[in-house]
Image (cartoon, rainbow, N blue to C red; front, side, top):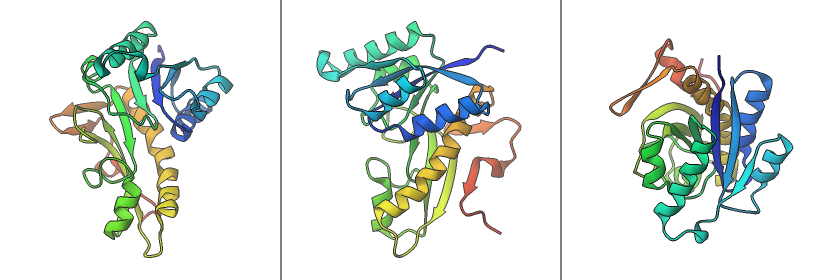
Length: 217
């Protein structure tokens, strides 16, 4: 079976990028990352790519006339490498229409909140400030909205009264590293079907698309 090619977009340290690399190298995810695109020449994700013999490519939006021009160029680079799935691993920009249209239901993102609650930046702080009792993370397909695409997998953590943004973010991040590679694995196996706003996971029980940490008794 031919391995699926993944293209990753990242702006920062790339811890989710590393989690995906680890899943591939352990054999739990049958795919290969063929390209890392970063809009930040100082992103630590670039060092991670080099360490694992993944091609890094810095593409600065300032070098392009418009936002659409930038994403058209991104699409060209992805297509040259026959990328089948685009993964956003801490890419701190709103995705442009050319990329969404070229890879409809093939751009995947993870957000540190239980969508549709607390979209946008600092989902952990929003949850902590609001006083919710449960927060978590969501893997979803990317559409034209802000964190509005169809949900693939979610994972939840309890929020303690004494939690800070940092302590809550740390617990959520551990779950991000689990469910992001899992969502990619399901996609690579052809088990995800988008039906309207819902994502059907072939061969999975309903409880397999929602994780709770720590597990409920």
